[in-house]
Amino acid sequence: MGKRVWVVLAAALALAAVTSGARLRSIVSQPGAAVAAEAGSEEGVPAATGKAADFVLPTPDGKEVRLSDLKGKVVVLSFWATWCPPCRKELPHLEALHKKYKDKPVQVLGVNLDLAGEDLARWLEENKVTFTTVADADGRAASAYGVKLLPTLVVVDQEMKIRQRIQGFNPKMEENLSRLIDGLLKGK
Image (tube, rainbow, N blue to C red; front, side, top):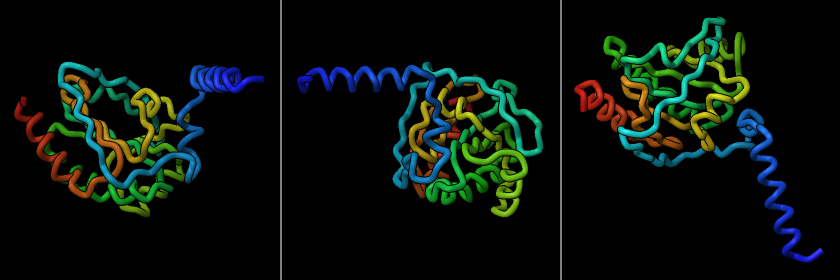
């Protein structure tokens, strides 16, 4: 076969793989299989676009969290995995945000991609993570949000519109998120 046929065949196979329902879970469930990003890249999403995809995911103790039930709050979604070093660096900053805004209509919501149930509960306790965390065992929520790098933060406003995406860890993320959250709480 000629080189052109091989290129077309490879493209067709790639398209088939993408459309066959391959899930993010297979990408992020194993260390090294997904990209863990150190440098944060912020992608601002215009306020008038990007409705947040609803999901229902379990907490480690079996309760369910439905994103749409958080309407009226600013929600900071953090997609992460325990094997991801930049994710682990980000967690103390998210914990600080959680404590800073605990008496405000703000919800920090961790979406873990590699553990669930008792394993996740144990890991969260050992690492002193107290903000609400859910398990995305099949990766559907992460896929709905286009997560390709870990960690990925998605800020959702009170009307369930995506206001910002941040991929990778940025040491200034806490300061930057505080400014954004404060602006959203003031109606800006």
